[in-house]
Image (tube, rainbow, N blue to C red):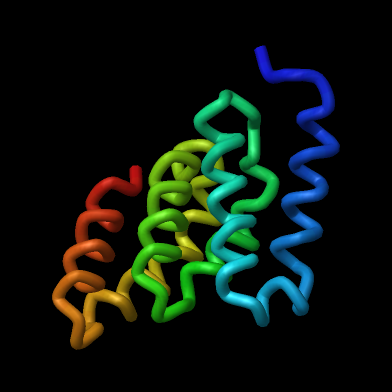
Amino acid sequence: MPYLGSEDAVKDLKRALCNPHIQADWLRYRNVIHNVIRHMTQGVDVSSVFMEMVKASATVDIVQKKLVYLYMCSYAPHKPDLALLAINTLCKDCSDPNPMVRGLALRSMCNLR
């Protein structure tokens, strides 16, 4: 059972992911994404921030990509229509010059169901 106040926490995370000032600071943005993953592992339903996380995957930061792809693979069965939108980003990353990004994108695409 999720802890009390989780709905407010998810709303705060969604607001933070949409905030352009936080998006401009890559470290704060990564920390917000890390908090989304933390809530996800604690059993809180954070599927409402799926689109914001898909937008967050369009970055050159490999750590941020790993966190976002972990989230997308976990919530793709719950939101299959939105998971289709993530395929475009994954396909772009499959043609990235960095082999780590290519491998991560391919592995994540194979894990989407």
